[in-house]
Amino acid sequence: MSRVLIAEDLYLLRDGLVHLLQAHGFTVVAAVESGPELLKGLLELRPDVSIVDVRLPPTFTDEGLQAALAARKQMPGLPVLVLSQHVEQLYARELLADGSGGIGYLLKDRVFNAEQFVDAVRRVAAGGTAMDPEVIAKLLARNARNEPLAALTPREREVLEAMAEGRSNAAISQRLYLSESAVAKHTASIFGKLGLAPSDDDNRRVLAVLAYLNSR
Picture 1 (cartoon, rainbow, N blue to C red):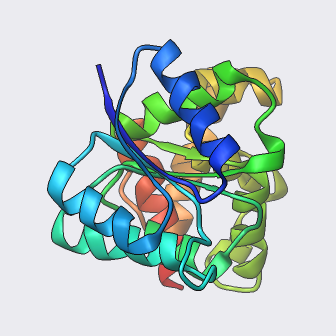
Picture 2: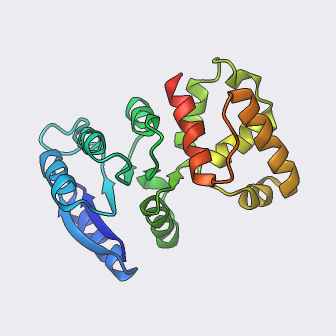
Picture 3: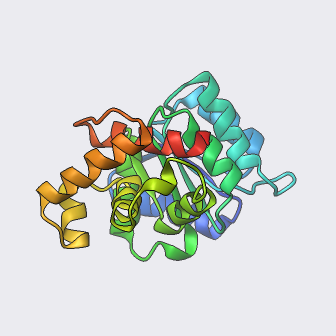
């Protein structure tokens, strides 16, 4: 049973998240509404995963992500799932850059059902990634002119985007209508062009790619 800390300033959304997660077997250890409360809760309670809004009181700028980044510096790999209205590219890149796992970034208006959201929370709590395709697309677009990323073929970029979302080779093959062997070949080519060693660990592989993209 995963222990969850929620940081959301809107009461109805915060309360709704509490009830949704409890209904799916999570233990909500705290539900806070400000950046200082979030940082204090992360350091003291050490939850299995935190769900964090970017803009929290007192200034409604970037308190949520700043608190998450500060906590992860003290506790590397602390699982954080960002739930935001917008893609904050700078902070998304910084959050992903350490490559230590347990990272998610979902857009509030693109969470379409409870199962999708709960699956993302569980994936991040387990040390994996859960990235909204729009977030990945914007991160990739920002790096589109960088070498060797520019050397990727259109199909390899599609595979890379799916990998960054946290999808397995089997899931990628179904999504792109490719055989698993074809996906494996594309994956090997991607790692070769990016100078990254292939790995059988899908989560570590995705994090390595994201760390590379965010270091450019």
